[in-house]
Length: 113
Length: 114
Image 1 (cartoon, rainbow over the protein chains, first blue to last red):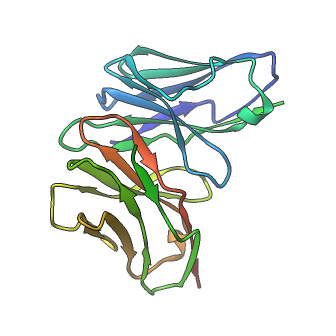
Image 2 (cartoon, each protein chain N blue to C red):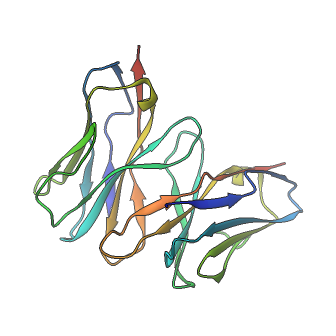
């Protein structure tokens, strides 16, 4: 089972709104990721949580706020976004050694209007 | 910093034929992992194949195989007996061992023609 579940699949929000993207996995993976992907571009790493602690923050603007409430859940809180933040947001989780393989969810399409 | 280069933005292949996608990378690490992911129009990122750098044997998954040349820092993907469902964007990715970050190449858009 390599399922990573993301909700919502589609989100339209105004620039003054506050919304959240949610990601869930029940595979016991202890590393979880947020990637941002613009059209025709590769995914760009945003955040990594390892054992529920933020281990990588790729200089992402503070209008994106990650949260890892427990080992199965990862949230991305969105506030005061800009239209250029419209993108596909991919959540992923990583198996431990010896596999070290990252599995992705289906993504959340975000449109900022 | 590690970089991953995919020099073929687009490729096409006839159904049932074989195609090879290229990937090179730059790293000073000796232990790392390499991956090929497929992203069809649905945008779901699907793992195709993975390779540990310490393994000399090339990974194989059904119709998919890699040619891993560690000294040359090359990691190409061969798709045999191409099928229409193989039409997708293919990303090569690199991850250091014991680190969490995975970096992607720019991608190769593959079209399988009937």
